[in-house]
Length: 231
Image 1 (cartoon, rainbow, N blue to C red):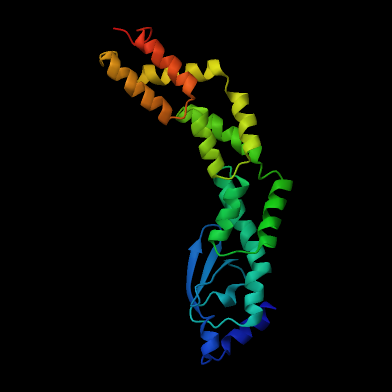
Image 2: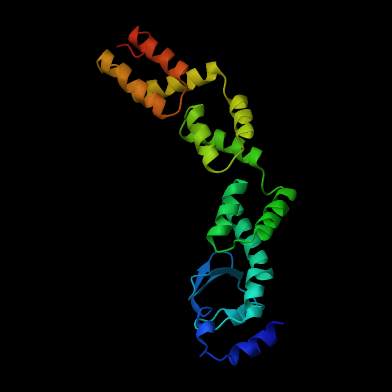
């Protein structure tokens, strides 16, 4: 099929106005041997550079119906899987992130997207619970935050709320949340700040970091009573 298509590619007529809508206007590189094909109609196709696709990687080429079928079908399927594996080789991802990355590269076939995600799940490359646990531990090590902040971040990458609550509850209890918040306050604020101003600043800081109201109120009350950050 590749050599036959290549022969056809060399002899294509380029005068049909209808065909102009499928003219290749640009080829761009992506890591892992991937290429993005852009057309004059605004369509994008993701392919792996190989002997099968080489004939399509030519600016100015007019795409025939059989080319479109390949680009939207088997070539897109291979490209989506390669893209997903490339992304997962750098760090863990949520299922939503993989879906979103595939769509952004021009693949809108639900069948292809579902297939990619399902295969990656079956082989252990994708696991939203593992992703959630890993994110919480990474975040708490690098930039500790409260559960509200973590919840917002995880919801933003499509993690199911049930998984989020499970993993937050495994990591946090009220005592641990208070201890995390106290460590942040002790490491950031000076006892030289006037007490009323200190309480206001700590209140805003901890709420911004996503700590629960009862934890913030508890720490601010301790500060007001001068049980913390005293000279």
